[in-house]
Image 1 (cartoon, rainbow, N blue to C red):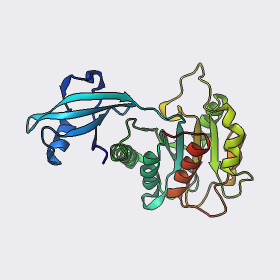
Image 2 (cartoon, rainbow, N blue to C red):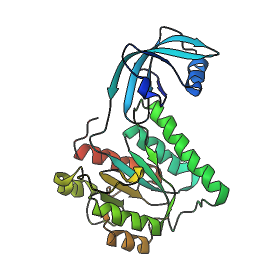
Image 3 (cartoon, rainbow, N blue to C red):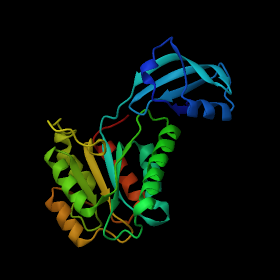
Length: 265
């Protein structure tokens, strides 16, 4: 059985044979879960480094560990997801599942037909729920890298970002039921040019990907949005003849993308 995973940004202290104290929040979780000295856990820093450690002290004052081994983990293909805001927490379900699959980043999208609206104080709380969901799923799936969650974007902001990403060589694939091409065929055609080559510009963390999938809301992506996104460089893709929910389309696309492009991490 794989080791329980905890997140601690103090990876600069991770040297095999060295000792250090877990951050207060994770030390609390270790204690609540009744771990005892002598047991092993995994600690990840959220940036791709993971350490196997042995607990040497667990008490109300904190938890100390002995570092047994350290390794770097990075996906071979970085896949991001633009997820339209959806009702009944289907967007959060998409985030949770896609973190487990290996998605590198998420962008909340206030699409024209999104029933859910992020405004004022609600927007900040809703965005934090996405971040918290990504953190929990990262730890549950034993990932070493924590996906980035970008700020919510309007359709106009998204179109501008797609144009910039396309110029850098990112494949932006918009999932659409009337698309003339299947995602598999598009990926097969573009595989030789992916992952994209580094550019001189530094993209935002959520756009530091090779392939970005876009999933619309329950009511679908509007014709105006389709036209604007494709004009900016995005490609319409189909995921098959069945109509998928907003909570599952991204996961299907992410699995296909990683499989077709040969990512086995």
